[in-house]
Length: 142
Image (cartoon, rainbow, N blue to C red):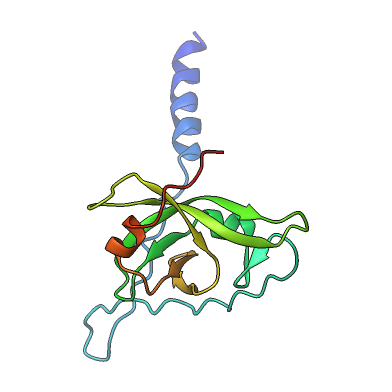
């Protein structure tokens, strides 16, 4: 006879556990009520120094970077970082993206590169073209 009483209590307890739904994300509105895109918070300038850093970026930030041209077009992806015995980064091995040498691995010096913020990371900008990178000799295997 207790079963009829327990079932409604169980249903009530389960309903209470559901919680309130998540509130909708806030939307920025212009004075006229039209939605506007949020302005991203500026990122601090890179400032890493010492062994295992270059251009103000850490080893991990460099390893996550893409190589882009002056217009921001991706030319290559950083595959590995080369350093001397003291830990100073001397160059990067990048894998070229797209024609004329898609997939070719080349070594580029760290000098002549600049950093560009990209989302939550950084890209490296070069003044070289895709053809100039493709003309470089293939990087030696590890």
